[in-house]
Image (cartoon, rainbow, N blue to C red; front, side, top):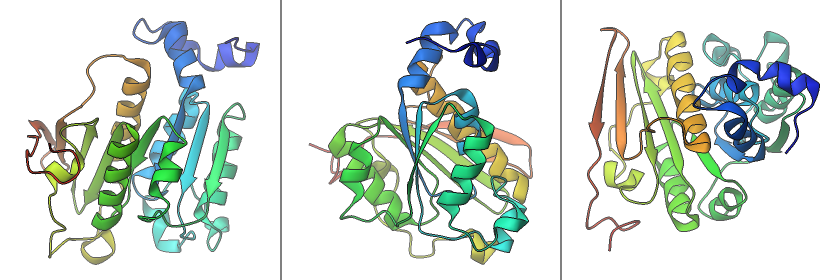
Length: 245
C-alpha cells in the first residue's frame, strides 16, 4: 500500500512513532471502522479516527443535529442544526481528511440489521446511550467476531472498554438497568465527551495497529470531578447467553 506525498506529510507524526510507523499506518488505511451513534462519544471519536487515517469510516445514526448537541458534539456546527447527523459528520470528516472514505447509514441500529451492518467492518466503536442498542451491538460483534470498543458517559464520569470474544459487554451488563440514566435526563459536562471519545478512538487505533496493550477485557473508569481514573478487569460470565459456553 503506497501513500501519496500528501499522506506522508499528513501522517508524519505517526510514521516516525515507533509503535505505529509505516506498517501501523498501512493497517489504519486498510481498516474499516463502524461508529454506532454519532453523538457525545462518537462525534469526537470520529474526528480523531479520520485524522489518524482510518481508510473507511462507517457512521450509523438516525438522529438530526440539535442545538443542545453542540455543547459536546464538536463535529457539528450551528448552521447544521436540523441536518442528519451522519451527513453533517460526513461533510466535516471529509473536510478534515479527504483520504478517508465515509459510509453513511441514516438509520437506527436494530436487532434486525446489526449483524449485516457490523459484519461489513473490521472494528466497531459504540458510543450510544441506549442499553438495548449496546446489547444488540455486542451480540452482533460476538457473532461476527468483530472487536468492540465501547464508550459511555454521563454527568461527570465516563468509561471505555474493549471486548473481543470473552468476556463480552453482556458479561459486564447482563440486564438492562431499570434506572438507567441518560445525558438528556441527568446532564453531562461537555468536555467529558471529548475525553471519553478520544480515549475510545485511541483504543480503536491500538487494536488496529497492535500498538501497546488495548483495554481488552478491561474497563477504564474516569471521574472528571475528582480528576482520577482507574482500570478494572471484566470477568467472563460462564452463564452469559452471548459468549458463554
